[in-house]
Image (cartoon, rainbow, N blue to C red; front, side):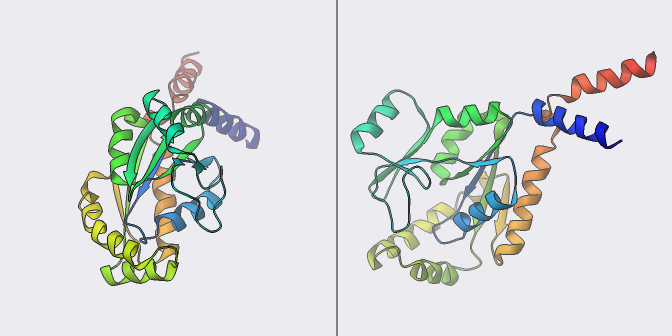
Length: 222
């Protein structure tokens, strides 16, 4: 029995195309923390590493957090159609390389994205059924502001700009498949895991099922 279950699991892993799981939120709502914890909790999930023209923040590493490139290199990627999505945020440019994402999906692994609503709209035009989107809301505006100050990564001016921009970002919540109200990080993580596991089980993602069901039918008719 155990051997049969293992074989069926292997069939499922081999026959499932990966999905693209997008997390979006205003800065400070907790999506980056959720992304990190989801990666630690779930096998078969890979973080999409974006390119950016902004300088690294303290503790960030090239190739792990972002691929840090200059504006000329960024412009070439855009011109060559090598980015799934790209956008300008506070004077810096960001984008998602197409090649690594497609290779990961073809291998049956899922790709996690930490991008804004503009990037999500662009990816939606290209991804089709591969895409699952989640918007993360803060519990209150006051808590959002507190988190931005606590993070101590930006100047007072940038924090005020981020707070002003958050209202526009949150206006796009209804464009997403799922919405999480991040009152508690553990509870939000549990909800996010539930979303990912349910989406993995959707019939349309399990391409191996058609052949497997046919084999069951053939065996029953024999």
